[in-house]
Image 1 (spheres, helix red, strand yellow):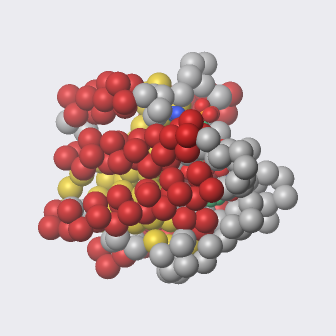
Image 2: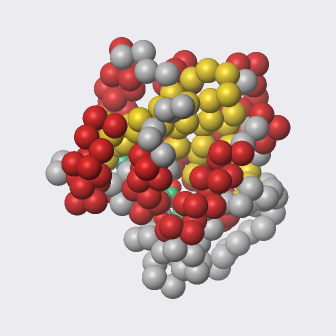
Length: 232
Ligand SMILES: NC(=O)c1ccc[n+]([C@@H]2O[C@H](COP(=O)([O-])OP(=O)(O)OC[C@H]3O[C@@H](n4cnc5c(N)ncnc54)[C@H](OP(=O)(O)O)[C@@H]3O)[C@@H](O)[C@H]2O)c1
C-alpha cells in the first residue's frame, strides 16, 4: 500500500537517500530542501518520479518557514505514515572557541526545528504512524563518544532532541504513534567526511529496515541503525 512519507533535509546526504528509497517502493514522498534550485540529484528524482515527489522549500532555522510549510500540509489534510526529521548541522568547535551563536544555531536546527515539525505533523498522523528523529551516538551521555573532539554544541543539541523526543513519545502513546530516535552511525556524507566507515547506502539500508520493523514497544527508545539499543 502506498504510504505518505515526509523527509527533511532531503537535497543531499542521507536525506536524499531516504527520499530515493521510499520513492523506489512506490510511496508518496514529501521532501524539504532549503533552497531553489534544489540539489541536482533531488531535481533528477523529481523529473523521474514527477507527482510522486513533492518538494517544499523550508529553512528549518526559520520558524515562519516551518509554519508556512506545515500549514500547507494541514490545509491539504495529508495523512502521514512516516516522518523522518533528518536535517541537521554540525560545526566543529572545541573548548577555547565556544561561543553563544554556534550553540544557539545547533539548538535551533537540531533540537527546536524537529520539535516544531513534530508538533505540527502529529495531528496529521494516526495509529501506527512513525516519527523518526535522526539523532547521533554523541548524544549519549553514558557513552560520551569523541568527547575530546569539538562536537560539543552538536552533541548537546542532539541530546536535547533525545529529551524532547522521549517526552513526545509518552505524549502520543495513547494515539499509538511511534516516536523513535535513530543513530545512523558514522557515515560518508558532507557531515561525516570521507574517512567515515559506512557508506550512505549502507546506513540508509540498515535504518530503513529498522524503521520498517518499528513497533510501539520501541517508541521512546534510542536505537542504532540496526535497531539495537543505545544507552542514554
Ligand atoms: N554523517 C554522519 O556521520 C552522521 C552521524 C550521526 C548523525 N548524523 C545525522 O544524520 C542526519 C543527516 O546527516 P548527513 O550526514 O546526511 O548530513 P549532510 O550531508 O550535511 O546533510 C544535512 C542536510 O540537512 C539540511 N539542513 C541543514 N540545515 C538546514 C536548515 N536550516 N534548513 C533546512 N535544511 C537544513 C541540509 O540542507 P542544505 O543542503 O541546504 O545545507 C542537508 O540537506 C543529521 O541529522 C545528522 O546530524 C550524521
